[in-house]
Image (cartoon, rainbow, N blue to C red; front, side, top):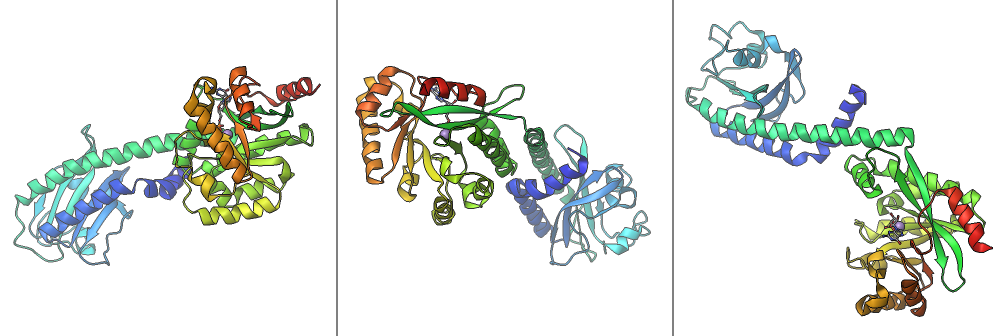
Length: 412
Ligand code: G
Ligand code: MN
């Protein structure tokens, strides 16, 4: 990522995400300034030849020293303190021979001053921690510097954590961005089989990422969410997935996985505008958090009106409290593969699957069993009156070409 883009990204996202460590530094700066009864306390960073103010606490709301403001380092106390050219404690900077002639003394109205270097845990100098008053203050002592030093060591550790967090976040951002830029994502399609009709009626589209080392789709989507790119990545996947529609027979649908946020914020509707909505099912996992059911319901109402169906994915996996299937009108309930595994040998699983089927009947929705791996499992599902099945026993997820070939061999 170009430096500018990275910087912009940092400003827009990391500040929001990494609020707690910033808040900690800010709180501690306030404590130390109040304790010493100074007018200003700040932490600076040396950035090339500049001294950049990073965190400020001030007695009054208006201050000349603003976060992100910078000065040539050579003109600041900070540089001189780190270089050993200034003492850490200056009782009155307006008369001290080393500072009285420095323009910054008057400009920032500095009188009594305390300052110490801030080092990162590996010993490199990050910047300084300083405080000063706008009047000579005889109560400040040389020994107050030791308190400042303790806090500087602590701040150094915290800043290192913050920098490390920024570095990894940028790494994640660049990784996801490169997938977005190069469309390094493939869609595979897994048949959905109608048990009673004995035919394939639709396909679930699943993303596979063409990257080394291979990482599962959930890792990619989690990382995208971490850096604010979840919408972009998911929409790319949905868009690619729906391209399959024109190759499939008219009576075949495609189901895509989508985060409830991307339904609520209108992204789903945007992408679907170009397709025959009646052939599209949106799958929302029972795992996903839904902030506001009302907002989601209203977005869904509009989509529904255009014919889109909604499925709740991973039901019965114990991730959530069945809240989604209670709160939203769903067309399809997809039973999680953990519920299907060995269902022929396991009464509790059978009972839960039957209960969900009964629930679905009340809600007038259809049940799809996922992860069916054996004939024995399929037989049990059939006996429970479950409508549809998906899983390795029928077919693995496969590229579109293979899915089409599978379909024509299965239907003939
Ligand atoms: O979106 P969902 O949670 O339904 O994703 C299903 C995942 O399960 C996909 O990654 C798919 O490859 C995988 N899968 C599909 N069928 C089977 C199956 O029969 N057994 C197992 N173990 N995994 C499956
Ligand atoms: Mn799914």
